[in-house]
Amino acid sequence: MMRKFLSLVSATCAGAVLATDSVLAKANRLETFVFNLSENRIEFSTQAAVQPKGMVITDPTRLVIDLPGTVFHRPTVKRPIGNPIQEVRVGQPEPGTTRLVVEFAPDFQMGNEPLYLTPLSPKHWSVQLPSQVAALQQRARSSFIWPLIGELTAGFGWRIHPISGEKRLHKGIDIAAPIGTPIFAAADGVVKEAGWDDSGYGNKVVIKHFDGTETLYAHTNRLFVSVGQTVKQGQPIAEVGSTGRSTGPHLHFEVLKEEQLLDPLAVLPLRYILFDVAAS
Ligand SMILES: [Zn+2]
Image (tube, rainbow, N blue to C red; front, side, top):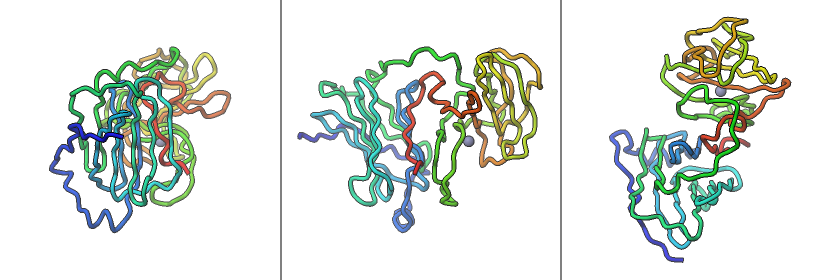
C-alpha cells in the first residue's frame, strides 16, 4: 500500500498548546464523534486537551486521525455511509491511541484541496471534508424540522457518565447554542406542558403533535408559549438556556411515540451521523 501525506495540517491555536505530561499521566477519552452532513465535516471532542495527528493515505483513499494518549475501551465502531465515503470507524489500533478513519470508495480521488485539522478548542476539533464529498444520499423526507441549529454535543442512548462512571440512559439529544437562541417547534401541535420541571429539566415545553408523537424541549430560558396553545412548525416556542440540571447553555430534545422514547436523530432530517463512542 502506498502511503502519501497530503497537506493535512494541524493548524495552531493559542489555546491548543498541549500539556503533554498531564495528558499522558491521566488517560484521555474520546467524548463525541460526529459526521456533520449538512456542513460536510467531521467533528470530535475529548475529555482533556489532545493534539491529533492526521494523514491521508492513498490506494485506497482513507483519512486517518490518531488521538495520542486517548483510550477507547470498546471494540471498533463502524458505520457504513454510502458513496464516496464508504465507512467511518473508531477504534484503538494500539493501546493509548484512538484512531478515527474515514474510508473512501476505491476510485475516489481526493484532489488537491488541503485538509485542515482545526481546533475549535483544545478538546474539540473539526476536519472540513473535500467539497466533492458533499453529495450524500438523503433520507426520505421527515415531517419534523430541527428545533435548533447548533452543535450536537450528545446523542441518545445508554452511556457511561464521564464523572460518576454510572450507566445512564440519555433520553434525547443535546444541541448547544448561546443563551437566548430561539428554539422552534419541530412540527405542528398543541402545547401540553410549559413551565418549570423539578426533575432536572428546568424550564420545559412539551408539544403533542397530531400523529400522537410528543416532543420535549428542556433547560430553556424564556418560554414563548403556554399550555393549550396551538403551535405551527418552525414557530419559536422558547429560547436556549441552562436551567435545571445543566452544565451549560443547550437544548435537550426528546421524541416520544406511544410513551416510547425514540432516537431523535432517527426522526429528524438527516443532518448528522453520530458515532456512539460514549455507550458501554
Ligand atoms: Zn440531554
